[in-house]
Image 1 (tube, rainbow, N blue to C red):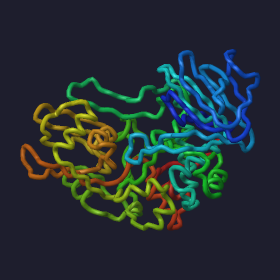
Image 2 (image 1 turned 180 degrees about the vertical axis):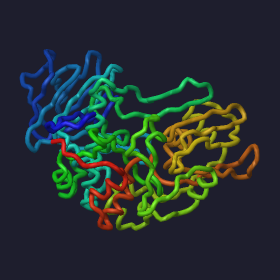
Image 3 (image 1 turned 135 degrees about the horizontal axis):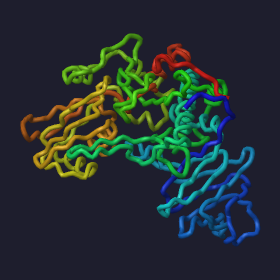
Image 4 (image 1 turned 30 degrees about the vertical axis):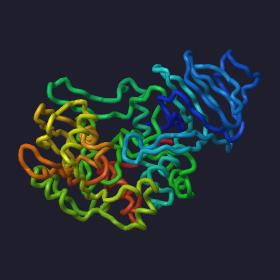
Length: 454
């Protein structure tokens, strides 16, 4: 992954995948490549509404009048200049508590590609820098402080280009669940970001949010990308695999807590504060940490700052720095059965076996009257213990009516997300207080430098 100087890449972003039907609108005149011999039209020009259906032998593309444009395993629908296209019913926040559907608008080319499973993907082909304008406006509010947007542009570009080099290189990782050990009584999974076969990266939280051009509501996002054009975060001669989450809870986390056990020297635990905090190493310390409210940049309730930096649907998530969730035992037992596939019987205890320095659990023993099982890493734990996801795996559990058969389980937690790398809300507060983009990335990624790629 050595740093090289090269031209700006063109990338493919999966907007919709595993769909049997896609509808949208072409706002301008587009040319269609890939229609193949089976066509009822003499021209490859298309405008206005369109629909596509996954069918045996490929995709059937139709125009607004329902006439067949062509049948092919893939179509490349190319616009020019200011032309845009809309996709209807795009899912965002998939499997998270903010999941919803919306219509989105994009620049660049639209690619429709059939998958091996009989479904198809709708893909946006777009230059990296145009992609980043939407990413930083989708991850954060486009009206956020300029230095926050600049730091986010650097990180998002770094993650993307590092991921592309892994994906397109000889060490490509594939498969949604990156690791499932064969040890009996243990399920440990983490989820990589190089699993996509039909495109480079997806458009949702699994990779980076990319919600189209309508999210770019101010010149600030465009300026942030332009002013940092080609700049990446580097460790020596390598592009950093820069990660970020919404709110670390006061301490950021190490890479290995969320993903594989590889060590990245720039993805270590740092305090989300001017002065260091000691790592959380014991259950007593975890309880003290999760039940307190230490000073931290992301410990803010300032509604004006949150409105300025967070997209509207993120502001629906309240109490992210410290939070409490309570379940009657019957509800939690049902969630565990639905999410894990295991029948634990009457739930007796949830026992943390290993935590990262931010207090995030990455090995948890679930004990029931019928069976016991160890689950990890942090995201799998969050999925097993919620209808969607717990905000984070930094929590302590208090069993109501303590005994062998508790009646309820109360989770007291810290932070929102995996906590690795940049804390988005913490960085926003730093920017609002006058920190520069260089100071922000230097705080969360100590020892790194900024390098120009193109």
